[in-house]
Length: 497
Image 1 (spheres, rainbow, N blue to C red):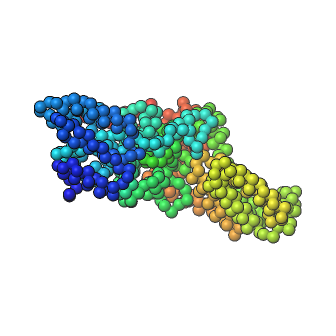
Image 2: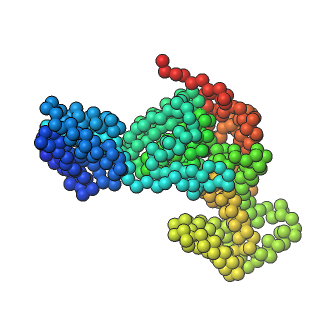
Image 3: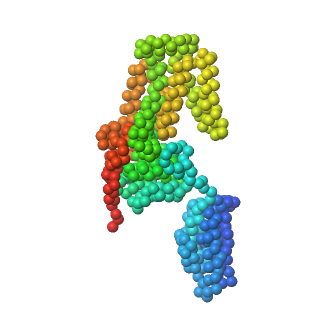
């Protein structure tokens, strides 16, 4: 066969089985209809990918009841009758070649082939085991919705539709991956998202040539602007309210089937320091927490570097009582401050990674107890000073305050680079490192949008929701560099004629 369906049912079944290598999870059922039940109908589907109740209600019941009742008619046309019954039960789509049948089966559909007919019918019976909607584990809040995305793209889309009830929410679907055939949906609000940004993301998705997409991180890596950076340029979230808020600002969401993490682009640097809970509390509370996050950002980034630089090169900056205390602590320590800080940071990173990989019941205990035991033992052994243990501990705790996990990883990488600059040139080296980091951040773009906006380039109006969060009554404009329609509450989208 050349891929087209044969008029002989047995040949078609054999071709489908051969396509799947006679896989044991491929199911074929035979039903007889027509006068004397001489017309054979085959149902082909993949076990585990279909919903048994949907198969029974939409296909088996119509074929075994209504079609058989009508089979006594003299002018019995199995194709017309079967199609009419399937249409009444929920619809079908035409399919006429083996590759399309294979793809339909792998997508959770049930294919119906009638003996003597060279066209099949595909009925949507998608199902199988799915995780229920639960509270997100990586982006928890004290106040706010408890729903989180699942691995089902259809469920995730429904969670967004529940929050944005407008027909202007556009959904464009495509399949990426020659082997995985992963469903990828592009979401944006017509009239709010910039057409140039939507077209840029659309073209980048269309340019992807790869055999498999297993997680949203694969898409993120393939469409990001600059790969030579440690900073994330695409935001991800498993909270429907966060994605809905991003869409309302003019961002574009990318849903990937099989993962609960949804991508949002363009992404700005300040976005990684914002939390969904900022908008569910009073503005003064939210602003205070945001300021605290930025303070923790600088502590996590600079605390070890400052300690190394000051204790090594700039002792005159330390008050005399504190200098005497630090000198007494470091008496007998065999390593320089940089090596001492680097070893402690590496040990803490090992404990952190071990706590993530170990089973949940013991992972947290190992990371906490390990840090306490190793830190205390290192001080008593005279390998590190108590001051260094305090600095490393405060640095690690401050890193956990950052809401975005991937931004926390970037800070940890930059921290080691700044420690090297501090060990080589003191505070001058730290200053040079910070200037280089800011210059690099200002050069980054996310889908063509400046990464450091609205601070660089500076936009005064957008400062209302950057470091501070003004009351919602003052947030009347969407971000300048993202949205095509800046005025909230006035949405006049173009309608097709």
